[in-house]
Structures are given as C-alpha cells and as structure tokens.
Length: 318
Image 1 (cartoon, rainbow, N blue to C red):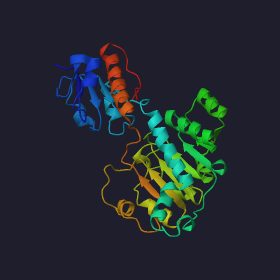
Image 2 (cartoon, one colour):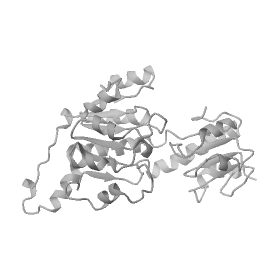
Image 3 (cartoon, rainbow, N blue to C red):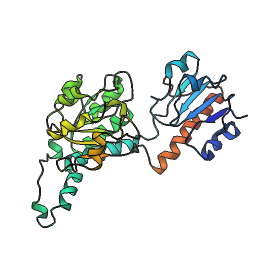
Image 4 (tube, rainbow, N blue to C red):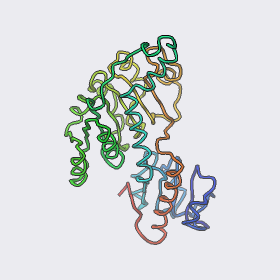
C-alpha cells in the first residue's frame, strides 16, 4: 500500500508520482505515514484515522486548518510550503497598492458614467507615489519583496515585524525601508497599509475596529495574507462610508467562500458612494501556471525527505 495519501483537490498526482513513485496515492489508506493536504480539515478526529502517521505536508503556506498541537502530541511533523508563490503574492499586493495610489478601479467606474464630460468628470484626491507612505505589516519572504517593489517605484516604505533577524533587517535597511517598533505608529502615518502575516494567536482578528480607527484618515488597506487576520468584514462598511477608509483591496476573507452579509452584498451591488473603492479576489494571489507546479514539486520533495529518513523542512509545530 502507498505510504503517502493525498487528502483532497489533486485529481491526477502525476507530478507527485515523478518524485514519490508508487508511494503516493489518492486512495484512503489508514496505514498511510504521510498526508499531503490542500484544504482538508486536519483535526484530532481525522488524525486518529491514521495510526502510523508520521507527517502532514501542507501544499500551501497557511496551516490554520491543521491541529498543530494535537499532531505534536502524537509526534507527527507538520510542514507547510512557504516559498513557492512569493513572487505571485507580492506582485498581487503591489498591483493592489498601485490601484490604491492611481485610483484605476475608481476612475473606471466614473468613466463609464461620464462619457460626455470624460476627462473633467472626476478628479479624486490622489497623492504622488513619491509623496506616499506604504506600511508593510510582516516583512518575511513576501512582505520584504513588497518592500523592495514599493521602494523601486518611489514609495516611502515603513514596516513592522518583531521577528526578523539582524540579517533580514540589514537587507531592508539597504533598500531604504524604515523599521517601526510600534504597530500603532506604523499604521497611523501610512497612506496604504498592506498585510503579510501568518495566522497566529497574535494576528487572528488583528484588523478590527480599533485597528481601523488607528489608521490615518483616508488611508487604504490591502490584505493578501490570511482572511483570519480580519474580523467580520461588515466592520469595513462604516469606515468606508465615512471615508476614514479610502479603498479596500482583499485577496482573502475571514470565511471562504463567503456567506451573504452586508459587506458581500455591498461589494456585489455597490451603492454609488462605494463603487470603485473595493476589490475582492477569490484567494488567488498565489496562483500562476508556474507556481502551481512549483507548489506540488516542493511539497512532494519535502515528503521524500521524510521517506528517505530525513527530518522534513519547514516544520510549523516544532
């Protein structure tokens, strides 16, 4: 029987089999030693179905649907796949940031409804990029890449990340990114705030009413990290309506797919005051044809380390 069970999403494990051979299968097997997981909920009940389980390999970056504590209590490694889509997510965040600065979506809406007046139809308040500050919360692989992109375009860049080592800080110093030691000071002075943090006890629900009130009036928010960093999205509506929050660009939501709520209805059929100010993508910032292959190769290679008797990389429950 196969040692590795792919729990969900993958329908043709051809890429995995190039690396793992006949050790990988889509068929449930209680004797499996490794699980390769896309979106499957891996809780205590699911883990207990596999008495020989040694490791759980997540295909993606996030691991909030995996019970890390219980897996650790059973001596089971849990690994994620943090490096495969750095380029794609950082570029999506940068596209959102540029949209906030240049009002591309906002102007598209007004152009459709002002064909005769056209260029004179609207001139929304717009700051020059070189006069704008982007705040990056979380400056790891993706956040630091966004810092570099933003600095190359001329933004002033500040960041907050208390977990960086000296080498990482020095690299950000070299490109002119300014470190802030206080989150409140960071978001209070920024024109655009961009989130790049994992889901942890410190970040879940961090974007709440107090967070939004702490942002500079008229600033915009970008989130390409984890939906769990935000409380229920209905909270955004009041801040958007009173213009404390200018634009909102999201690749993630607290619940996916989202259930109907006031925010979702306002996004789908926006009132005039909201049109052009919200963009929501269906959690696809990670995707490109290349990254989808890279993801599966990297996950399978890490599983092979375990099958070869080595400790897997990127353990998140150690």
